[in-house]
Length: 545
Image 1 (cartoon, rainbow, N blue to C red):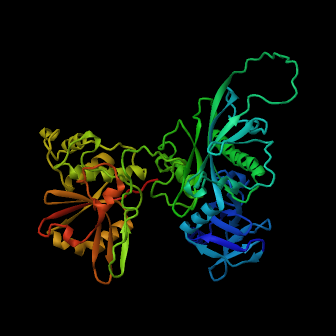
Image 2 (image 1 turned 30 degrees about the horizontal axis):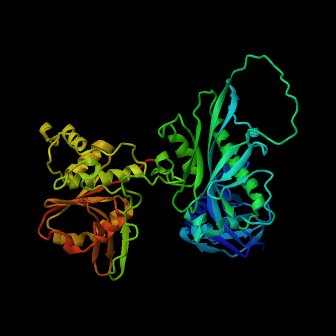
Image 3 (image 1 turned 90 degrees about the horizontal axis):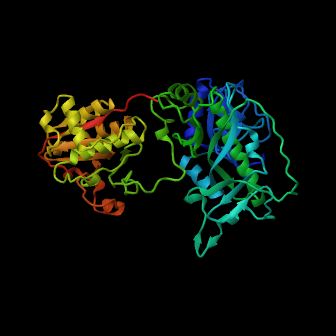
């Protein structure tokens, strides 16, 4: 066997076991270096769905269609892998035609392996091509990838790559050389920025120009091709082969663009936009292009019948909406902190298990948005945090409502008189539930607790909520409101700790202060007013894709 190790990512193996029992077939996504073959994902398709390159366009550079799964799949090449069930319904893995041993690794371990073994290049740039106007198919010409036309500029290293690049035997790992004690480029610190360039001149022999004029009635239009390409390049790859590696990755994006354009018959089609997604269990992003002139609602059938089906993702939650896309270069200028609980130490209680919010949320608190709501706006801020969760998980595109807009919604549903708008009056869990329903169409369960001392007895119910729904919870009692992001619950003792996000914070967006001072942190049963009455609003996740 060529590889010393064959690794399969754990969530993928679970997905394969389930799919094989349902007689599903498809392709396997792999990455490898000289010693390791890593199986990272699967794509459902029939054996008739060829060529494989059609599915390889979903993958960033460095990943390949490296095998098949199914009841009767057969590996073609020596390095291809196959996964099927044996007679005992256990997973059987073959390399070529030989049964092999494999190891199961967690997604985090697989990601760490990729970070330590590869450099991630993100190539960005704008190419423009000329396309004829007509009713035929619209295709980006392959000449756009001509060796003579393209070059790649590594901005941080001030390095230009082109077809004539000659770096002798130097490997790509040389890009990680330290400068003044600091690494200038690192695969683990995010993608390496790389700019795509088009040549406007050359050093070839010059001739006297001649002009030939052909008259016809054909009209053409300039068509923008916006490139944002991700490629995982092995550190051991010779540097003089990096240009070809990046160019091959770029060809996948052009092929994906053309696949997107193939559905269009008019030149007024939307310019394809390349987006990256990372569904649960995948240790690397996958790439999908959407036409810019179609909304998420327009693309519903494509997402449900093609993407969710191909990637074996349940169609009960958004995964491939534009809002689900991940940014290769995250915007660091966001005014709000997100996921402020990450990095907090776990409470130490016997046999305690964590049950946490699933997904991303923004921290809304007093004094934001140039709004002085100190002393009365805590429930409004908790509601804004809940809405941010539904926005970040792509369940809605509605903006975060202001305090006044929240009040107007309550007036519109008949919960408050019109004089309520513009006041500084409090709201509670019932009003939060009403706004979620009216504004987002989200239903909620209301949990009633007669006194704060009884909240610790609700640990199991709250754990079930975070397991099945995963949404943050708004809790109001007395004159205070908070957001519950999770619980640490012990089945053996019933002991419970609450992960609290406190909207009463009035300071700046300083994560260290927020965590160190307990504005986001674990609280015990004594955190609650032992005699106060509490209502909890538990938002329910709708089924949609």
